[in-house]
Image (cartoon, rainbow, N blue to C red; front, side):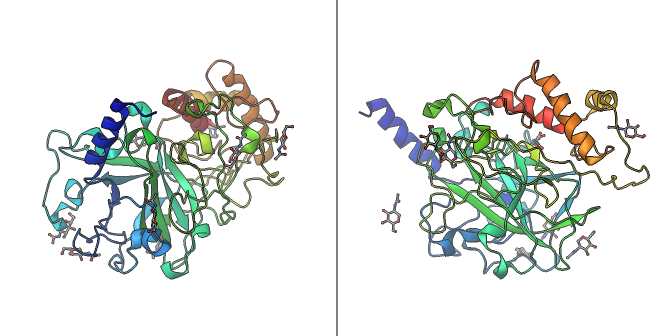
Length: 399
Ligand SMILES: *[C@@H]1O[C@H](CO)[C@@H](O)[C@H](O)[C@H]1NC(C)=O
Ligand SMILES: *[C@@H]1O[C@H](CO)[C@@H](O)[C@H](O)[C@H]1NC(C)=O
Ligand SMILES: *[C@@H]1O[C@H](CO)[C@@H](O)[C@H](O)[C@H]1NC(C)=O
Ligand SMILES: *[C@@H]1O[C@H](CO)[C@@H](O)[C@H](O)[C@H]1NC(C)=O
Ligand SMILES: *[C@@H]1O[C@H](CO)[C@@H](O)[C@H](O)[C@H]1NC(C)=O
Ligand SMILES: *[C@@H]1O[C@H](CO)[C@@H](O)[C@H](O)[C@H]1NC(C)=O
Ligand SMILES: *[C@@H]1O[C@H](CO)[C@@H](O)[C@H](O)[C@H]1NC(C)=O
Ligand SMILES: *[C@@H]1O[C@H](CO)[C@@H](O)[C@H](O)[C@H]1NC(C)=O
């Protein structure tokens, strides 16, 4: 039975979430100038997508509002790119084309929703963030892009917390076709703070500084494989994860869903679905030379990706065998913002194995590990374990 309190808080949520929500903002996006009046319904880029027809939710229904020619969101391979996420264009760099003008908060320019409570961006606090992602399709003609063409290449598990949000671009990203690529930003928020809302904004993007020409692997539907204490699941099932290139979540629409989770267990761009924080390193055709065994709830097989081992842009040093000691020293000096490929100096097979040893060594002292040669796999962090995820993501960065 629903308590009176629950009913009351339900209506409180309704009244706060009825206002603006969040979008990624950039001139390269579809719908940059769409206002509440452009459509017969409020279809601003920030409005949530729920129970919509495909035409309504795909690219937010904004395919008739393309970016100006030449506007691209640049994705520097192996580096960080910063996006702006906000409840209103007026809170971004592009306030001058916003109906309401500049609403940025002078005392806190990083506020994604100036003047609004946290419920506006659908979280009850920093431990209640579900992450967001960027996906890419290696096609230039948006009318040719299908949902299964998108591959998630970068995740920020702590969005939407700040307006300026960093995304790490995998170093192995190949160049886009001549007309650039098509990207999209995806977000599904925590069920603790609002309804079953999906967010998608499409934009034109282009990979710069590419040093690899290996294509992305065919993306697969992500699978739930982490612990989920809120739903009574205490143990992770790593053999149930999808490994390698993964599609974004398409959830809670009238048409073309690829995810079917219920109202209170939304899919999320977190370890629970094997979306590690930062660059998604294992999305390429050569990431798993030995193949990926079919995942399943009873599988205990966890495939190990081979890191991108092409020399970094400066390309002076030939690949060399690295000792465990040198990996350790890299670990010590790794930068939090580093999006370098896992151990770019070493040969692929050698480093893959060493990566695991190194990882196994770390795991005894500092939290869960992701990849392992063995089948004794430790838990993937679940709901409300943001601190654990942070630990894991720093592990990921030092690979
Ligand atoms: C979804 O939309 C359909 C058709 O418009 C409607 O019948 C149904 O009640 C809606 N479901 C929800 C959960 O809003
Ligand atoms: C959006 O509006 C601004 C200001 O009117 C204009 O300069 C810009 O070209 C428009 N962009 C698009 C994609 O329509
Ligand atoms: C609005 O600001 C953008 C970004 O600073 C600038 O490129 C553009 O020229 C400005 N447009 C107008 C209409 O002032
Ligand atoms: C996510 O974005 C925040 C805010 O920009 C940034 O501090 C953090 O490092 C980003 N996370 C990753 C994994 O890039
Ligand atoms: C994409 O970036 C590459 C590398 O900088 C560049 O050569 C190419 O012209 C860009 N493509 C577009 C469509 O701007
Ligand atoms: C395995 O993944 C599927 C698909 O996401 C999910 O429905 C199922 O609950 C998961 N099973 C286990 C045991 O994790
Ligand atoms: C997994 O194992 C359980 C228990 O042995 C069995 O009931 C179930 O059918 C198996 N599921 C799959 C998908 O093999
Ligand atoms: C990579 O090679 C450079 C130059 O030889 C060296 O300074 C660095 O420590 C090496 N890094 C790793 C991870 O082996």
